[in-house]
Image (cartoon, rainbow, N blue to C red; front, side, top):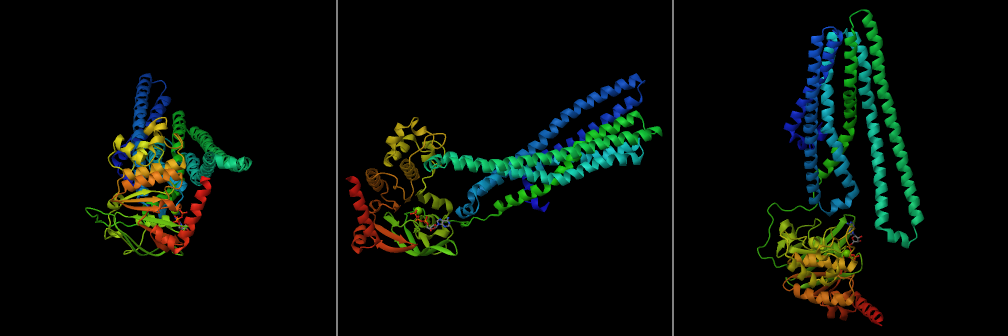
Length: 578
Ligand SMILES: Nc1ncnc2c1ncn2[C@@H]1O[C@H](COP(=O)(O)OP(=O)(O)OP(=O)(O)O)[C@@H](O)[C@H]1O
Ligand SMILES: [Mg+2]
């Protein structure tokens, strides 16, 4: 059970409930075994009417009572497993939100999702209802054997018991196969829904490339696999069902045959026959459950291992226990000899050194893939980096507290990610206390977005995303800018955040940003050089190296990449305006 070491405490927390449930399993089993015993009495003494009446009344009372207890037993045990499931999922979610980008580069989100759903469910079944199912035979089988031995010779009990034992063995052997088959079906269903999802959201691309037939063919292939796996599952189930019911029938025939022989010897009554048949009926399912539970062991163990891998994962970025945070952060950035690679074999940044005085603007330009976003992510400490390479306000990045650093940065990400929530909720995202509507409107105006929001059906309460409106690329970018501004940070970072707006909106945005960013440090990454021409300092990156640095005019004078790109873009702009 050591492989469940980390999972068991989630269930142990509800031991009182589980204990009560298990005690009830015992009581119910005793009541259920008692009933056939009473009925046997009645069958064997058909002429003693008063006795029969009392027995029938007692059976009724036991039947009703055990019904109520059975309800409570499920309530407690299944309930405890549901509470444990909730706690487990909460712990998983919390852990996952604490892990950083490197972990998510290594694990597909679909896989993480299936761990949080089907693996947790496998563990819940195994440790919750599963325990209930096996507690029953553990209590009932010894009692039943003891009671039967009182009524019939041992060899009768033995012969009848063998096919029942067979049930557990068959189940034990076949249930892993069943589990495998149903996992395969689930996987196949996952692939189908991924395919559908991708096709619906990418339908424009599919149509633009005329790939409808090819997509349908790919769907048929997946759908065929799904069918085959479902048929395999049906075959396994049918095979198992046949084996199980044959074992039960075999037991019934044996009772008839062996009991009949015993009856000839007069130590086996009609009541005994009834008792045997009832017990076989009663123990049939619990014995199946034992086999099923034992068969589940591997699947549950694998699930526990997969969850452990999440719980064991260590965030790549380690935050100090006693993090620092200057009382009055200014936003001064110092980078010294910073080198970095996502993997050791392939460095992406090479010995970058630069200084951004507090309250100034840094422009960061360079070819695509030159390492601009990477540098921004490092400044926000989203990836681990060596001590002594980055300091903010004179404090080494490794000594900053996480909360302090997060407060310091307002990030406008390159992909313009927004949540499927209302515009108002999206803009307020970084704030612990919700900003007033006036403040939101004011910020949206600064981000040049207010006019468009007014035109939306529900204004600021309009939903973004699949169930709401689809924002254009430029609208998303400006929504992300407004979100960062509302966060009111000391350092504002724009990762290519003006690329999807036209030049006149860009000019208006830059003008208001200069106002808003007064007293803040600003980093602007851009492909269009007009976005950075006013910056106090511009760095040109190429393959992770700073190849040019200076102000706009200085860079034009050197005649390097910046000057060439500037001239080309100006020419393109003039052609466009014609
Ligand atoms: N998560 C990652 N894992 C491995 N390599 C990465 C990862 N992210 C980026 N890279 C690589 O790092 C290099 C720099 O990428 P980066 O995104 O920083 O470039 P960029 O200058 O922002 O480009 P763009 O202008 O296109 O946004 C690229 O070669 C890219 O392939
Ligand atoms: Mg980038």
